Image (cartoon, rainbow, N blue to C red; front, side, top):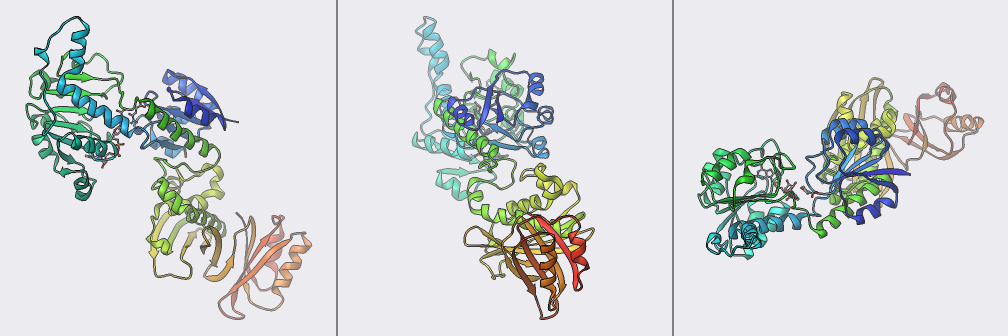
Amino acid sequence: MAKVLVSDPIDQAGIDILSQVATVDIKTGLSPEELVQIVPEYDALMIRSGSRVTQEIIEAGTQLKIIGRAGVGVDNVDVDAATRKGIVVVNSPEGNTIAAAEHALAMMLALSRYIPDANASVKSGDWDRKSFIGAEVYKKTLGIVGLGKIGSHVATAAKAMGMKLLAYDPFISTERADQLGCRLVEMDVLLQESDYITLHIPKTPETTHLINANAIAKMKPNARIINCSRGGIIDEAALYNALKERKIAGAALDVYETEPLGDSPLKSLEKQVILTPHLGASTTEAQVNVAIDVAEQIRDVLLGLPARSAVNIPGLGPDVLEELRPYMQLAETLGNLVGQLAGGRVEQLVVKLQGELATNKSQPIVVAALKGLLSQALRERVNYVNASIEAKERGIRVIETRDAAVRDYAGSLHLEAKGSLGEHSVTGALLGDSEIRITDIDEFPVNVPPSKHMLFTLHRDMPGIIGKIGSLLGSFNVNIASMQVGRKIVRGDAVMVLSLDDPLPDGILDEITKVSGIRDAYTVTL
Ligand SMILES: NC(=O)C1=CN([C@@H]2O[C@H](COP(=O)(O)OP(=O)(O)OC[C@H]3O[C@@H](n4cnc5c(N)ncnc54)[C@H](O)[C@@H]3O)[C@@H](O)[C@H]2O)C=CC1
Ligand SMILES: O=C(O)CCC(=O)C(=O)O
């Protein structure tokens, strides 16, 4: 049975799902050294934000197939290292959206009305009403940085509270911002015009210290900033100085440059600062959502099925996966077939998407074709995660083309592999929704389903040749399941495609190539 290590607190709903297919060990609070030591036993690792999955841990995880992050941000996982090792990294892109958005809104209101300090004051025995005169958010301007899932929910709620909305997000359209009632502006405008600024962006090289001394200098003196996204987007030293010198009115932070927050001067500031310990996703509802979402994906991957929210399988969201899955199977089968026909070292793969397939997202198809192509060499070591990297490291040039005009089938895929031993091409299509047909071998038209054991010959189309191959296979006790010949002209060159019930015994291929009229013969195992 597979083994899963859960190294952060995860809701029981997720553990129950994992337990259907694996032995689950819950070991929280491990040091990085302890994690390195025990990770080799495990097939999957499930974490929240508490565990940092470094390259060293990934290298040590020789059995690891999947790392599941029960949340959105995967910045605590070395995704590149996982990708190189073919380990799928999944997250829960939506499970805690509402929780994080509501936390940001709660922070904005709490900051405006000094709720944490007022609460502490009452609990300490005071009845001080003068020190806590707050500000209303009604009719104030909220600047939202990052109008993705969380930012959009914040926008909708803030709109309902009568706020004016600005948004900065270089990757969303004006139409989308309009829909949410936001005016899409440049960052400088947002900084200059907002009374409240809330950050909902990932931490990337571009967003690190996006809010630095320079940006803070552009903000209004009454401005308050909220960060429930990622630590490090705000330069904490610059923020501290600005707050201390009253250049801005307040800040509410849930995330920090280093977590847990150590000996930070921010802790010394009073009612203009609120600090929470990375609680954005900490609601019962969100924890159930993310635990189920990620546990289901770990279960699926351990059962050999694809994951719906893999962050390191290019372009493979759940909607794309649903639509392209049959074509990906086709691509993988054809990649495997053309790789075996080409033999030797493949230097170039042309992937041509034809008919309706030409209008589809190509990346998953190309990845699937490469996975098939490399599967003979790498077996189970190649997967959708690392196929592109493995191909690149082997110097395989990938050329992608599209031809929507090819209409033999609704959608078809043509692969050409050029290598040290020559050049071969195959074309395939889907019959109905998912039945694969090989429709062309080296430009000879055929119509055969792939089968586990196959024999392909290139021969001269002449009487008696099929019988000779049949007898030869019979003499080696190999049963033919089906046979088809593809030719362009009568008595010219032709290909023969045989599906066999049994693998070809050693030596028979040499015998076949000796038959008069046979130019070449290839065995393929799919
Ligand atoms: N505090 C907490 O516990 C939680 C924090 N988060 C964090 O919140 C952040 C937002 O999450 P989601 O809304 O789910 O992500 P999302 O991917 O739906 O939205 C992010 C948005 O940021 C935009 N963006 C990217 N780079 C940008 C840049 N340089 N400038 C402006 N906009 C940029 C993107 O276009 C996208 O619209 C993430 O960093 C996530 O890790 C998420 C959940 C809980
Ligand atoms: O696991 C958590 O509580 C943190 C959630 C978070 O930061 C995220 O989902 O990006």
